[in-house]
Picture (tube, rainbow, N blue to C red):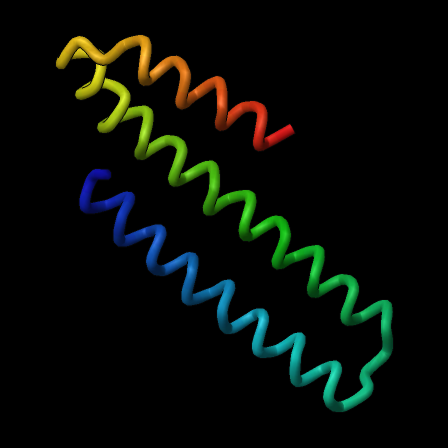
Length: 87
C-alpha cells in the first residue's frame, strides 16, 4: 500500500471510531432512534469509502507486484474470492 493511501486509511479509521463512540453516547443518552439510525448509515458509508480506498491501494501495489512476479493466478483467485465476500 502506498504511504498516502495508508495515511488516509488510518485517518478514516479514526473518523469511524469517533463516529462509533458518538453513536454509543447517543444510545446511552436514549436519543431519538431515527437520529441514531442516520448516524449508523453515515458509519456504513464511511466504511464503504475505507474499503474502496483499501481496494484501490491493493490494486495499485499488491496486484501489480504479484502479476509482475508471475503470481497472476493467485491474484485472480484472491480477487475472485474478495468479489464473492463483497456480494
